[in-house]
Amino acid sequence: MLKRSREGLSIPLDASLYGALGQAMKARDAVTEYVNCECVMTFFLTDKSVEAILPEGLELTPSQSAAVFIAHYPFSTIGPYYEMFTLIQVDFEGEMGYYLPYIYVDNDAAMAGGREVVGAPKKFAKMGIEKYMDIVTGYLERPPNKKLLTLSIKPEQRIPDAMVDSMLPEKTPIYSLRMLPPIEGGDGLAQLVRWYAYMRIHEDDEVKVTYDHVKLGRKRIWGGEATLTYDSPSLSDPIHKVEVKQILMGAYMHYDMALRPDKVVKEWKL
Image (cartoon, rainbow, N blue to C red; front, side):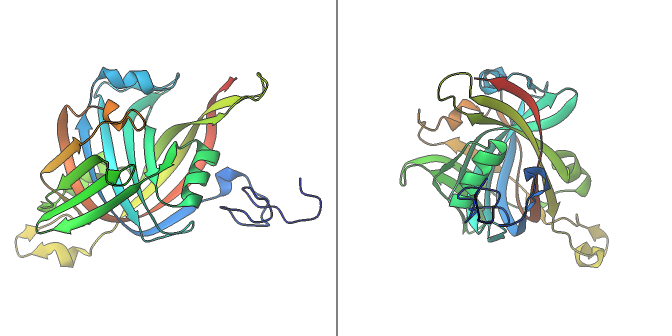
C-alpha cells in the first residue's frame, strides 16, 4: 500500500503501533505473549437479561454464568499494563466460549490492537490490584476517583487442579464484535470474531506442594471468599448490566498467557 516504505500490521504502516514491522502477515499469525501475570477473578451466575447485549449468533448457555477478571501484565509483547474485563459464557454452533462485552486497559497498543484486530471493545481506565492483610482487591475507575467496580478475594487455599481445568481450560475461545462504521452507507462492516486465549497457570513441582499426608494442588491459583460490587453505575460504562446473582468461585493466580486471533465467524454489511 505504501509507495516505498516498509509496512507493519497496524497504522501508521511505517511505524506500526503493534505487530512486527516489515513482516507481511495475517493477524491470525500474530501471537501476543504475556509473562508472569497476576489477576483476581470471579465466576458468578447472572440472568437472561444479558441476552440483550449478545450479538446475533451467540446463545447464552443454560448455566447463565459470567466472569470478571482484573489483571496485571508486568511484561507483554505490546508493553506492560493493567486490564479489567467481563466475560459471558456463550454457545456458538455447539462450541462453548465467552463473549467479551466490556474491557478496559491503560496501554495504547493494547487498546488499538484489541479494537482493530478482534473487536475487543477496549476503553482507557484506571485500575489496579492491591494487597492488604489477607485480602487481594482489584478495582476499576473511570474517570479516576469514580469507582465502577471492586473485586475482593480472600485467597485461603489452592484450588484443586481438576476444578481449575474445568473452569479455566488452557485454550479458551473468546468472541467479540469488530465494527467498521459506514461512511456513505453500504461500505461499513460488523464482524463477529473468534480468537483464543492460551492460559498456562504457573505450577509447582509435586515435592513443593506435598507435606507428609497433605498434598496441595500444583497450580498457583488460590481460592476463597469473593465479593464483587458495582460501586457506582454509569451509563457511559454499563458494566453493571451483567448482574451478579450468585458468586460461584473467586481466585487469585499467577500465570503466563498468549492471545491469537482465529477467524471471522459471522458478518454483517452496514
